[in-house]
Length: 320
Length: 320
Image (cartoon, rainbow over all chains, first blue to last red; front, side, top):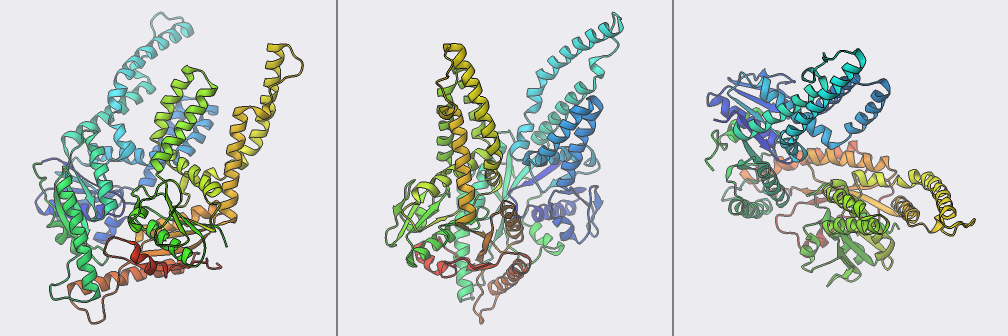
């Protein structure tokens, strides 16, 4: 069994609900499960009527299920503060002021949000995940984040050459400044080199884990726009060697009872017919199977409907 | 009456349908109307069952209504080709190759798409709009595009100082190269200066027109995500001195007939109740009035439902 399960998809399709339901099902199946939500609206807390924070907490009433909520904004802030602090230790005050300005600008780029969140997810995969059999994320890497996965290959040679050059420059500096013939500072202990090596190693871990120990599902809704976006997401993940195991079609309009008649029933039947066509299109034109079909709920999603949603979800991925 | 009407909102909320309906209503009211669609799915062509391209074309069966469809991808391509060509005339081949690489990269940035589309919209406002009383766009400037509106102020002083410096350098070059005491090349005719002046003037026109001769509506759906996004869009437009005249709530679930009963009717009634709450929230917490409430359609949107949708839309903006 793969340890990590990701539910990706555009905002609003219902990733958080589907992930929570899957977490419940996984725990019920006997797997010690951690549910990780990155939804800024904290809907995992709403679903279970219990407040979750940045560390895994047992979900009351659900044996074997823990949950945590990551606040992406706080992560961006912490991430940039970390960069600032590290830089401040290595460069002069003038440079620090300039870096501050750059960081302020970087704060507002969409890439910063993604990168910080991805860093946090990698941390969860390495650290917080240890005591669990399965970890469920209500997000999947997208766009620029996926590009970070190819970083280790690019960084590989470059870091090696950099170490060499840095060693030479350290040697000369030492010899010039101190007059020793044997330098005492070593590139192996240089903080900048260490940071580059650490980054390279971190993304290499992420790439390996996502490719070898993770399952990806995409959640979509039965409308044209969502289907088109999902098609792009499947291709995009594939182009980074990440295979989508299945699609979850969420928010299907429920069929009226057979004897129902009138404006409302006619509306629902026509709508269902169109959504049917859409799902059929997905089934016949996507290279990825539809693994679950979930009906729309009219009310607020709370824990009592999760079991119902969960029965639709496969706790073991299909052998595609 | 303002000449330009913009319908903004996130993808999928129904901007194109609402714009088409508004165009029909405007033409029926006796105003010579041009409908401009930027929807890459060409849904304006689908709605009217008639193919539209990049130039205004009379809509068959609708007196006083013309339509055009702008292909944003083609615009990005043309825009970048234009930059490439212009650069090639002014710099060496080595620099051109480097620029080519940069342009290839720029092609994939979301900003390029927005900027190219905005350039095209400005062109429509200046040129194609001339024979019409009213021009309806199924998009509104967002994000980075809005920032372009403040460009003229920033460019103002900078261009003036640049002209001065460029004139000095041209003078010296002429004197050194030719030995004349009176230079013959003039900053006034310099192509780089001309290009900067043209840009400054173009965005100044856009800012003026959007502030003084345009009406903005935002289309949203009665769900939490759409309402939150609309709230941000209103604020964002306001921060650039663009006032939203009204909100159009689209895709409201239709109420079942009073005598209907059963699973379907219960689902619809609960859904309607939630959407009602959402609309009430919009009405009480937004500083912008809801000017239209439009019911969801179960089928493909075609011209025959446009009149029905149009009756909901105010052809004159409310005096907010």
